[in-house]
Amino acid sequence: MSAQHALEDELKRALSDDTNIASAFGTPLRFVTGSEDRAAYPFIRALRHETRPDAPNADGLLDHRISLEIFSRSGGREEAMRLIGLIADALRAAELSPSGHHLILFHPVFSDVFLRPDGTTFRGLLRFRALSEPASLV
Image (cartoon, rainbow, N blue to C red):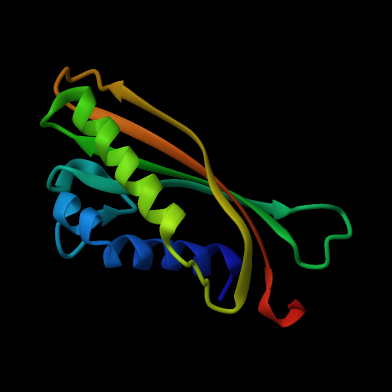
């Protein structure tokens, strides 16, 4: 399994296992990878996952930039900010172990909340940075 897919699967697992996330986003977790038109609110969507070698001779060390979004229609900006905080806290506290890979670094680097053009939906954006290497190198 690629490092990108292994890390995404691990993020979904960690979020699904967190009781605060489950109470906010439902069970099973409302985590979508496509169009939000069919999802119940609030929900989480994987927006982007960019992966590149950390350095030219990094021997498998990968730099990940991951963007997650939340969409909420109740509670206004404050609720969207609370949901972003729940995700950041849950992933900060989780012991992430992507299959076949060793996670060296994982932390949030950016968050913000925007009102969508419909005037009722808030979009929260949360970006993470991670460094990983194949478990065989550890």
